[in-house]
Each structure stands twice: as C-alpha cells, then as structure tokens.
Image (tube, rainbow, N blue to C red):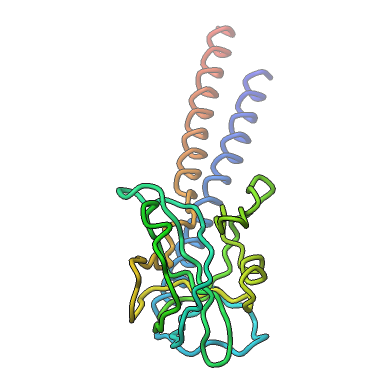
Length: 221
C-alpha cells in the first residue's frame, strides 16, 4: 500500500511539474511571436501622425516635420558605458499640432546646455510608456527633472497632446542629443528559464520518488 501511494504521488507530482514546464514553453513561443510582431511594426515604413483622437497604437512608425519650442522635460536615466544622464522630452510643433518628442539621451554633463527652438524632421515610433508606479518620486518641477516617462502628465506639463514620438532618426540640429530608438530589448522574456526550472523540478521529484520506492521495497524485504 505504501508502495502504491508513493508511486501515485510521484506520478501526480511529475505530471503537474511537466505540465507547468510545457505551459512555459507554449508561453515562450507566444512571447517570441509577439516580439517579432512588435519588431516588424517598429521597423515598418513610417507614415504621418495619426489624427487627433485616433486609437492609441504603440510602436506605430511616423515621420513628422516641425520644430521644437525650447520647452523640455529631462527624465533621469543612464546608459551603459556612458553613465548617468537624461532623456530629453521636447514639445514639438508640427502641422498646427503640439506633441511630445523623446529626442534621446544627453549625459549629465550636458544637462544645462541650451537647446533652443529648432526645426527638425523626426522619424520614430509612437509610444505610451508605463514606467511609473507608487514608488516613483514626483517630478521636480523647479528643475524640470522627472524620474519616469508619463505621457499624459508630461503632455499636461508642456501643454501638448498626450502623444509621444520616440525618435529613431533626427534630421536637423540634434543639439547633442543622441536618439534612443524603441526596441524589444526591455520587454522581459523569461519563459525559457521558467520552463527549465519546472522540468528540473520534475526530474528531482522523479528521483526522490524512485528513492522513496526503493527504500519502501527494501524495508519490505
């Protein structure tokens, strides 16, 4: 009886753990397909800015001509191999509209460098980043330094539409700002690691079950 109970428990435990591993493999394939779709959308041929009130579609590629207004927000960030710095979010006028443009990165040493109004042609992607949570400090409105991108709050602060273009390429006077194009690098895809963990646990469970059965059989002899 003990032998059968240990066997049933082992089979059930292995089945559950292997099932979880298979589920993570399925999630891995789903995530890979999703990332491929995002990459394809990001790299597609750019079009014009969607009309006001159009549905928000992340990563839509656009190309706009206009000029910055000199108004900007600096979002604290950093880059590997460079160090701390800021993401420059500028108010941008194009075709009678005012939107936000994430022009890219400036190192901390260039924070105070003047960036007056300048004509630019920006090719990039629409984005509505979700970077804030309850632990995010409020922006320092005196210095214009923010600690996360919040499209609607930044639009309210700069008097623009809640539309953010993340620059991929900038034509004109970049004023020392280096574009940081959108990509899928920041989207987590840990499902392979989870699958390996579940399958490893299944192997351990099977080994422990075999050892337990061996001990039961040895005691019975």
